[in-house]
Image (cartoon, helix red, strand yellow):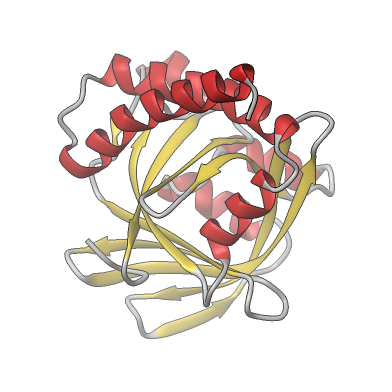
Length: 218
């Protein structure tokens, strides 16, 4: 490992240490969390360019081995949301996201919970794209069904998932505009490991998730 690569790894560890603490305690200063997310975003692009295995490691941590389930801990909100109301910061309700690359097609699920009870769950498919040249990894996704109160399954038509996602807080208004242009919603994925995942949404917001043992986990 070169001195430059070692320095990158050291800076990544420093940024992640703040994010690990935020995920565990929700007590880290919000500005420090945003700073760590911004630093990690920049550093992981460098790491992806330096290490041709890194993007695959991120993908496997995110969705491999039967899937990964993640609870949303912190979000800056979309750029438009920040302009209207400021940063959302620590997410106030239980929201989870899971990815499973063992399914065909690859399965993505989003959910909002009251305690352990699922109020609403979106289900659909996702794809993963990676460019070592730019260092950017991207998850594109769409939802094809919704389940209400763990009872009623409803098929979703074109554009409905984006609209409902924006209204529920699980998606952004930008996804609605993408749908109108015939494009899928996306995340520019930053990182995923045994503890946390981070990404920038299509609306410009940054987010931090904590790995949980099951889709509605703590």
